[in-house]
Length: 523
Image (cartoon, rainbow, N blue to C red; front, side, top):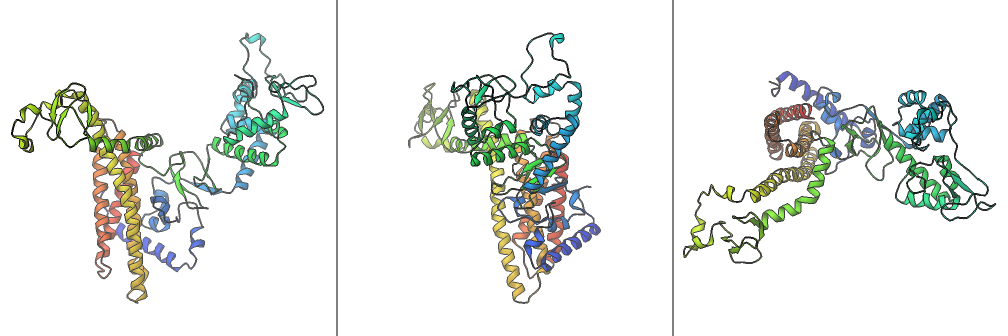
């Protein structure tokens, strides 16, 4: 019953879509219209689905944008806004814990910027908190009576200690040589610190660890900056440190576009769709990859890694090799003759039918006749298992890849539809609003096909015999049929036939309901 839509609902949805489209057409400045919100209102056209979606138009077809299963509340912040946000958190920690800003910042990073949890642990055992943040070294193996009391003052970094030599270059302290160290007692001159920090920054590492082997203590920002005299290195340290703070914050994520400085803020780091208001890039807030519902972040990473490693190899193996029918070893044919001999078991067989070569006799082409061979599987069980695993991967990969190609082709088709509509408008044969439903339908088709593409990694990793496997495959098949039916209607749209509109709109709303149900149920 959830797959059926009543006509009244469709009518309201069509009116909402038309109103959104009319508002878009009436706007004389697309840039102004596209910069009004962060809740996925308007995106640029790129080959990837969510980078090419006008969310106002699409959500006009739904009762409410926030009813979308991938939606969450978020906002896009500028770098100064994020700096202010982080500095306010540091000031609050300084006030609550009576610490220097650099130390408070290091503690907040260790506790994922959860000040409440930090305060609770601080009141319980402040030394353990400092050790967790790697500001203090671990306690030696001593009894509880020998441990420092909870109220004991925290050791401070060692600075400018006369008569102590740098443990790297061995130069003693002098008016020209200053050594600085952490609470661990290991001290190094400022020149060695500066060279070490510069090397760390080249690898984009913000955590500056003690240079002593097997010492895991981290230097605070004030100590690092006190050692850096080169303005370029100082700027680089601020940049890397800023990115590290954002990465450690559970509510913040940098825009994934390399040339964008936008930072997105959400209440929690869920695998939800977010769209940067500055550059309109869309991605998963949890992992930073392209949005991938219903597949979760861990599975999509495994899938992409497998595709990167296996796709070309699998295609080659499938096209150029076969398993020996006797021992199951994989064999490549490198000549024109169909008489093959396995290098492992020396079995002679026919490349075409995999039958015993001795049984061919004079009737070489006898193998062109189809014959069932039920014993084949048992004779080469090991090889058959490996090839079956390959077949399974190729089954899902080819469909995944095919939908990606279809998305690119349909983007080109949408441009052609726009051109055809514009041509008719210029000839005064109608207005944009008369055919705007096709644009809405094409955008919704992209949304549904994109989701359909990401159902295949989910299906690949779904265990055999899983209680919901049959239900998922049924819903996947229903969505696939709805997507292909909608694609067929859009590609063969007749702009002169006004009766075509109702059929397209009914199909696109049916398709979207199928997509929403699948994402809600399995994501």
